[in-house]
Image (tube, rainbow, N blue to C red; front, side):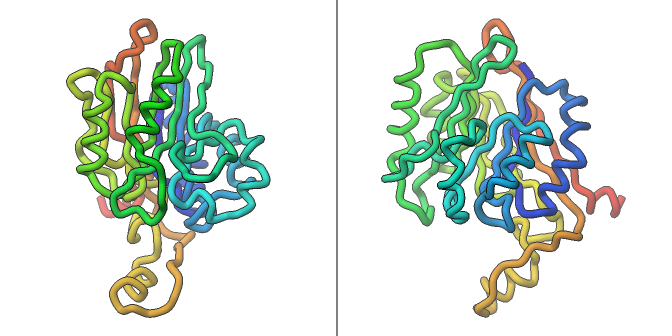
Length: 265
């Protein structure tokens, strides 16, 4: 089973990056299943139905969210019918949609779960470990279980990954938009990376125009972050290969396509 997972898609340029490269990458890796984090896909925060449909139309099988899940309130209108969408499982007092879904692919169950971390996050949520344990407890069939762990700190993500080593197939970090260099298979066969990265503008601050972020974050000006839709794009993802019989991870690989680097070289 060959699975591709792409980090947070940021705005129109992130959508363009996937549109142009996903068919090529699916062919290169002979992908059976594609997962994308899309909590920033609509102008940098949240997701609307049009962009949910866009991802399905280009060949994305599962779509995860994060702390910006409800920045587009229209999500409430379509989330229950969005069969590819997975919102954070440990939300408090939000009952629409699902935080964990199972997809049947070539006779194999692939479970995708979205979980919010707690450290330094701007949203209250239930304990991620307890919530994940509840998901595992309710699982009866043998499956590949991919967790999108959406959080700020590498320490919290690593701790959760080692705690669940051997109980979950992969714990893949999202949210910080910077691809880390620690993709590995843990001792009991759980795949881990602190952050998959993002799909968005290469020369940016987390996908947003550098000048707008500097003015707001450093110079304390009252202006919103902007996205440069016409810049060079960056694609970050990971490739995961699982044995079809044992469902154990056999191979992992970082994916990075950077138009700016190619231009410079």
